[in-house]
Amino acid sequence: MISQQLTKQQKIAIGVAVFLFSVLMVLTLWYLFTHPLFTNSLRDVSIIFLAITVIVLDVVLIFLMFQVIRLLEFLIVELKPVLDSVQETTSTVRGTATFVSDGVTSPMIDASSKAAGVKGSVSFVVGSVLGGFSKGRSRTQPAGAPEPAGAGSTQTTGNPSQPNSTQETASNG
Image 1: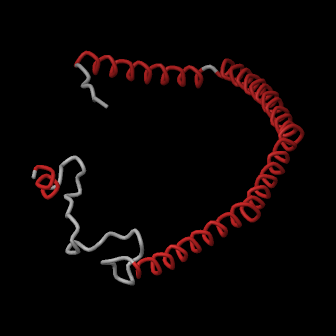
Image 2: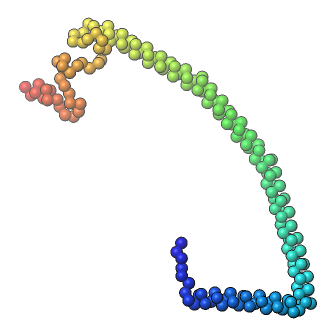
């Protein structure tokens, strides 16, 4: 926040206003002390004004209290059934999720993992059996595994867009 400095004229105006207010208060008190009839009348009028103000505030507070009671009735009558319905729906969704998890998802995961295990085992056994009959393969190397680099195969660069130097010389010569 930017603080603004008061100008000399503004300071003088504020000082004059405070002085005039103080003088007005002193004159009012002097007048009330020197004129008891007017002071008694003013006191009575002030008491009546204060009583009327209290009555009006009481009416407003009673009105606000009835509004709060109506709000509470609304919450109890209208909102409670909605909250009960939401709670029932939540428990139904929770039950459905539990059923799907226990009855559908878990058995599918179990079956899939067992199938993957059987596939891996069969692949290993077939690779071991066929691997013993093929040339240049060791007995422990499964079928489909890449051959070692020194086993007579050509070394690739790993980038299919760049031709292998041994392939280039074979195709050129």
